[in-house]
Amino acid sequence: MRIALVSDIHGNLAALEAVAADIGRRGIDFVINLGDNISGPLLPRQTASFLMSSGWLSLAGNHDRQIRSLPADTSGATPADEYAYSQLTAVELEWLRTLQPSVRLDDEIFVCHGTPSDDCTYFLETVEYGRVRLASPAEIARRLGGEHSPVVACGHTHVSRAVRTASGQFIVNPGSVGQPAYADDDPEPHVVEAGSADTRYAIIERTPGGWNAQHIALPYDHKSMAALAKQRNRPDWEFALMTGYAR
Image (tube, rainbow, N blue to C red; front, side, top):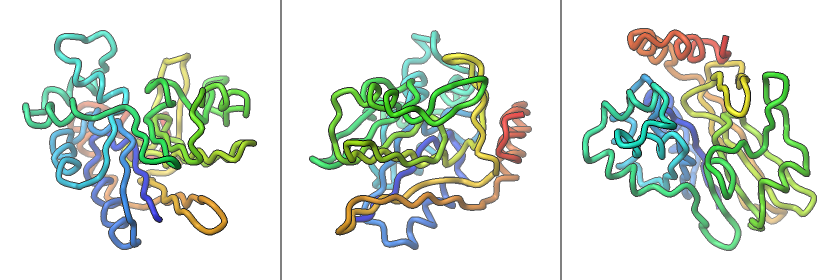
């Protein structure tokens, strides 16, 4: 069993197409998209259309939840969310409203955007001194809560990582397809940076010895997406898409 994990596309259609093409060459049985699909200044409607026709299992991330709450509730929405909402038709919005924040596939695999109980909480990372570090075993155990699936997949932090807990649970974050760096103020000001413009995803595989993960970083036409961010007057996105750094 080989499963591709993608996450945090953020409307970056060029990166998504590069990932989908690579997945198609690798003999993948199933693709799971862990959410934050369209928020951003790039191509939200086109990205939603691609995902709707992909046949992949897609989740809702915190930004998807915020977008589908607009325009009635603007309390959590960012300018990137508001732009994405403005580009959608009723068809894409209806699809967005069908997505769940977490899904239990079977007795072995549980997938979520943030943690099993919260789409906005970092799972495998903790903010410290303006950056993120690997969360401690105790922090990860608290965030797992009562979830005991052998494999747990998460997104949200845009950091490619795999952790095997003392009890043997395997937790995998594939990194971000579409946004290699960002700055955020929650829970305190910090940056997350991949250090390259590459698009990222992961493959998990069940073998006779247990589950393993392969993290993949791919070059793609990132300059076209950076140019689009510049056109949308988002220099922060332009810089992140060009460099993989937030500043």
